[in-house]
Length: 196
View (cartoon, rainbow, N blue to C red):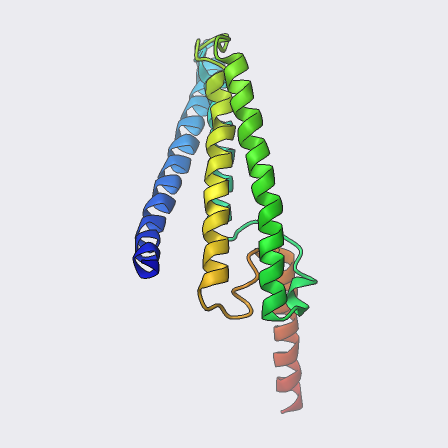
């Protein structure tokens, strides 16, 4: 059963990730076309797309929440790993479980708050498009649910499958830290060349 469960998750995860990537690209493309088209129309023809600003804002909110789900799935969120790096594997697993509980609680609050706002604002419409305000708050529900599923999946993989010590750090290093590491490596290589 466990093997079947892992196989299903392993096959489903790339499909969901790809669907998220396509959705994010579509949001970004439509936003770019709307904003660029509106700027050109405004300056060249003294007119514009009335729907542009409102729809771009709505798409941006959806883009942020979908991007957060994708970043969670790919461990791309930046975090502080100063303590985690020094812990043994069991300590890393304990930290994964504790932080997952905190994040799951926040996801539940996000889903609950967004669902409440959807219900309150369902009869209110956006001024230009006439779409219900609920379409704006639906991004919070979808984002919270997607993050919740992604966090559960990441924790399931980290706690049930064999992992190396580095794989148990479920965050991304900042770009500055990788630049410092590259500089250290270059400095060591330069020192070795100077000695020879």
